[in-house]
Figure 1 (cartoon, rainbow over the protein chains, first blue to last red):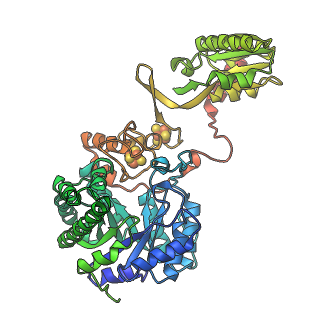
Figure 2 (cartoon, chains in turn orange, brown):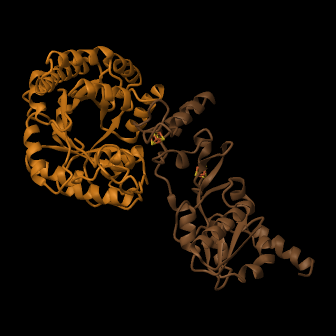
Figure 3 (cartoon, rainbow over the protein chains, first blue to last red):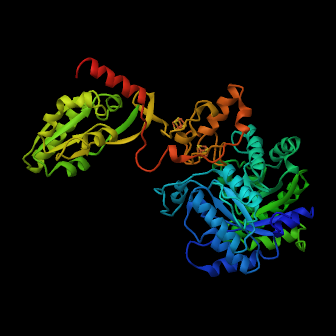
Length: 323
Length: 233
Ligand code: SF4
Ligand code: SF4
């Protein structure tokens, strides 16, 4: 065992792993984290705690992860390269390990411009850091754990023992380069991979075939990303605007049909689309887990943590293994 | 070349309005090519300031001139006495020129007339694009000659992030993703496998260090000293 985290143990047991996602609030409200943690607890092996996703200021991933951990939910803390140089990154990693955190997902992080893309003012004028990139960050975590050394070479008397993860966009542009992208992260030391949300299962399976031919599925645990769709509008948006995500037309049609079944009733429109979205998510989970080389699923119900219980149960992934 | 763009006239006016004798001082190399701060632009800025002064009823003399380069003493030294006879120099050279002059004008302040933006090239007539960030440790041999430090929004060294969308950067459709281009170019050059090598964390001290970075070329100094001795200067 590298870290002894539940996620690592479930994966080692050969059973499909389930991770979920918890977005910390944009205020100092720790109760919000506790509330969300309670919704997820028991229905996943670990939950990602986002690190100022879309560059919006929120409770830090480490602090929220510590709260989740104290409340019985195993966290996957996230660490972006956007906001910290290697000094701050390593200091935070030591602190996180001292707080008992065991999983860390390395990310480039969304550009600061995203923080003002919606209704928020955000901080589009912030200076980004990118002292290191994702591959380099993965390497730093591995070096700290396996060699007991800081990036600069100074020894760590007590080394942080993280189960190291990285994200991967299997269908991102340029698509032929994406397997090499994964290869680099695995070579750098990624123990597990969570993918960008997948709707086009056929295309994903083609990419996975390449990954299997490269043997990468045996060197890292790939968790397929499932983003629970809420509405036809969301699917259309994901298809047109989110990098590396394409949504088959039939899926959008299916959601539109669910919406149309509600007639003019707005509330019902929402309900029926959410029900259909949950059905779609369950099917995607099953298809993903049937794909050779996939070791688990990363289910994101964005600002909809309450949906996870039903999805995990219906997908036959409950109860979670006791490891 | 170094690319810059003119500051708005209102900002310039706020800088100069309390001075009586102002020299708008152009530089005829990089910033002239990008139409920001050559002698011609200095002339235009000088007349804009005069117009503004007469609108505001301010008494002020505004002249202009230009030299070939603000960053080498041999070009502006002959003009230095004249420059020092003003209350204020508004330099339309790049930031290097403003700094270099400020170190040499004694009690006369030198203010910036332009915003120095980047090192770039002429992409199309009137369009300038940043292509290098002067990082002090060039790695273009690893990336097909296209710079991820200057051109990737996240200065990534190991390939594209997940934000690449149809060849564009995640920050917006007007920005090309340079990693998309690097992959394309390396494919064309038959060197794609090179990109599979992991680039370790960089030593950024060549890019930003304690105090200004300096390069000292001893052989050039020795040569110039010998030449000066020969000519008896
Ligand atoms: S690698 Fe450095 S020196 Fe080379 S083009 Fe990029 S910024 Fe300039
Ligand atoms: S989309 Fe391309 S250019 Fe933009 S940050 Fe990502 S890799 Fe860099």
